Image (cartoon, rainbow, N blue to C red; front, side):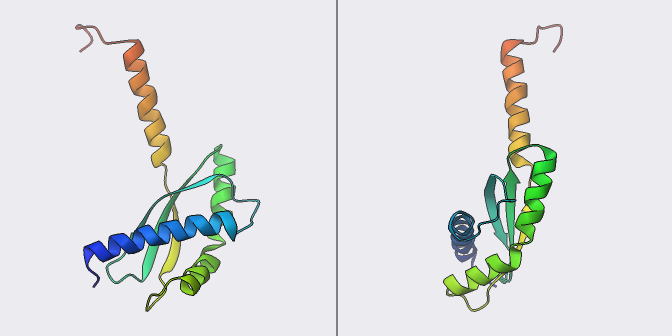
Length: 122
C-alpha cells in the first residue's frame, strides 16, 4: 500500500502525462474538446480512474467518450514507457458531469441574483 502523499503525486503526474498525450500523441479526430478533471488511484497503484468531461451536445460527448475509451490501452502503453513505476496502472476513463453540474449551479445563482426572493417566498 502506498503512502497517501505518494498516491497524490502519482495521480497528479498521470493527469499531466495523459493531458500531454491527448495533445501531442493521440491524433484521433473523433475525440472532441476533453477536460481531465482528476485521476484517482487505488491503494496499490494498479488502477487509474481518469475522470473526464467533454464540451458539446450529448451526441458529440458520447462519440468523443467512445473514441477516448478506445485509446485506454495505448495510453497505458505510453504511461509504461514514460513513467518509472514497478507496475503500469490500468487506465479507465470515466465520464463525469461535474462541469455541467457547476454550470447549472452558476445558472441558478445568477437567477437568484436577478430575481431575489421576497420574504413571503422564503
